[in-house]
Image 1: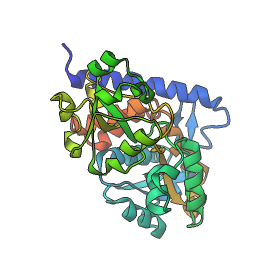
Image 2: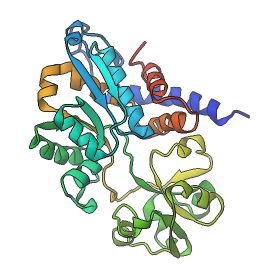
Image 3: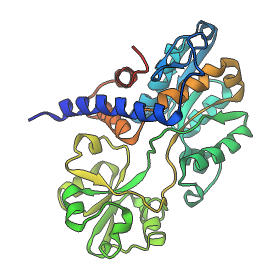
Image 4: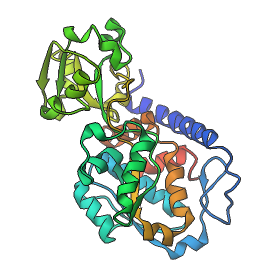
Length: 328
């Protein structure tokens, strides 16, 4: 029987290649790119542009695994496009990261659209659009007032989700959150202590989906899967990019937010407008290009490589870029 590590590596290579193929076909021809211009060529391959060697960039990220992986993907992609790159993967909280890009301490960093809108610009979670492009546009309008800009969002969203054992989903025929209607009264839900008030947690499930649960119990973040495995919880609030969802996909599943209630947690790359102008067109082009393969399953696999297999973010990012065909 194959180990989780072996299955992860096989699945990762296939998912990365498939996601890239889908992304490229969806975006149409890349005939407007050429090796003389740098950026992308063919099936997303990044070509070095000598002119970019005059530009030095520092790519930052907040200091937790998913952010560090993203920071490395962007940094390595930009290095492949010919830029002189430094990485700073220890920016701490979103407030620190936001200040770092405004001050010019870093050239840019990945941020979640929902976090930007709620933490920086004062929106309530229920005011954050669930549509990725709408959330990006709303955030970008605010960033522009600060002399910043955000590049288009990633395909994946890192957000809260209703998770459960696959056996429970099969027992009740659950695929979407709406399927809980008429069933939730029999089920217990576990979530973070603030879940009662959050629109992307119990509050939204009750108010916007019209659900009532047998019981709700607060749980520490590290025990969200444990309570499911031990049978204490029927449902648990998970994150869509949790590595367990890749490593143990035969055990755990998440329900689709079919009413698009939960705020958009897609990643947007935040930078100064002056930095983007000075770095030239390959800057944004490369960021957007290396994101094409970052579907939800691929991001789950990347998180699993780092959090469960103990690869470094640098190693996981390099493997992704190579498997997806961005680098040789």
